[in-house]
Length: 389
Image (tube, rainbow, N blue to C red; front, top):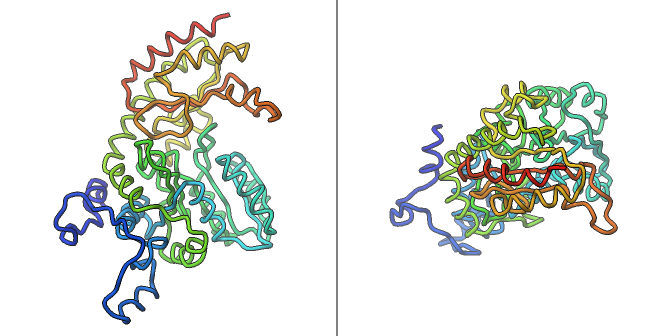
């Protein structure tokens, strides 16, 4: 299906809402029926009908159809956050006594879900180097039910060979889940590589305007139906119709935004990689990345997110350097919007009783947005004076 068609027209039955070009916000909590027979039919299949907006809603249904098509999936569910999407996707595949395998460095709240939440309910786990198929296979137990992947992750950008991981998991009857937030469906489609469920923080590229917190899970109709009937409905993580409408607005420009961010980031990364005050750059789209060949194989682009380790001797240097980059790079978490952002690891030092992070204070994650790359490079040029001895 053509991406332009699905983003602009798929699911938009305009004759049902007065031929409006833009879908309306169906801001209703519940829906009325004209007969008991129709009401019963809707209750029996709430995933595909409208009974109560905790389950489904007409605005959300348009969004679900587009997101599923983008990920080459049969169906999708939308959530109030990316963390909720990851949590429900994982929980829906497990029960007490099961075992889960996860990449070593997933998103921080996914790590806490696995290590601190699921363990309370009798679920065991191991964090593994999922770039090594032998290590994955050696960690598989008879009760292993889920292999959780994040390729690339969103800080140090390790990749996994998704097709190989999917084939190994299928051999052992293990469900695969992949967080695809970094690449977006524009640059990577894990389901096409054999992955069972794909999750996103839709807050990032999918929305792209830094004004919605949301998540999505995409997969087969059977897996989405099973997830919906218990985990989704019982836990109640639904997105509001208004936020779903904002996401529909964001999707219309998704390819343009991520392509521009990708183009700008490559230019900035090339500049930083050769700078004498840079120790190394981590960006899957740069030849210096240790898994560059795998990235080229399973991704068609890389977006605007990368990390840099600088040659700084003192944390005070990094603090001055990072502040000198403002406002070109805002000090803020997340990514995917119009504006460029930075998360210096130095922020997580000197937090009182909290231990220092495993990464050095000289390490910074950057997101390059839609600003001109020469404008961004000029900001770096001026800030580098703060790293002088």
